[in-house]
Length: 312
Image (cartoon, rainbow, N blue to C red):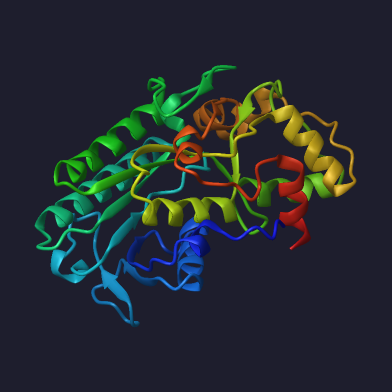
């Protein structure tokens, strides 16, 4: 890993940060990182009352969050939402949409009720906003796409929009594929690839816009402390790759062949609509907002990123 100082080390400012979704892969890594950098973190939890220091109860399903409980914070990072990586039944599609839209609307109302507003709110979003776009290079000014996920993300971002009208800096985190051996897509791919049974999925030509977990949490901290970051932000490496390239690079890093394809029809049989809109769909993102604001990636390229991740 590069020995270059992190962006947060260059900016000594410290913040009080409220985080929802703090037990997920990204949220838990963010909480750890923020505390290591000297920030104070308060976690939103779905219990009647906080059982540990720094915990704040809320109920996004009922739309309840006491604004007084989050008074005094400098920043809010809202990441909560139902998981996407499973077969989409009608009930689960409802949960995917409602958990994001209702939870974000709850957060927006609480911010409106706060006497002292936070400086910034980071609200979860996703690259699914753009839909399946082939080889088109997508920055934050690119139009919304079509499909279930694109419609969810449009509604999700719309639920956060009232925060900006309150004079609070709003950052929409259009997250790409987050790479970590501890969870998410990479953790699921490692077992078959280690056995030499990995390979491209579908045709392999779909673009994968990825980001290491370490860069994702660094980018979120950078957005917290950097006033120039606002609006939609693509959280993805500046070097996206096709699914075929990803498979070959992962195989090379693991010193295993990666030549066994997983056909599109098999993925659709297993996962249905979810496969069509995620695994088989492609978005070729460029992180223009981040790089323009001066953020520097520790893992801009896939092979060094995978070697670093898997070495740890």
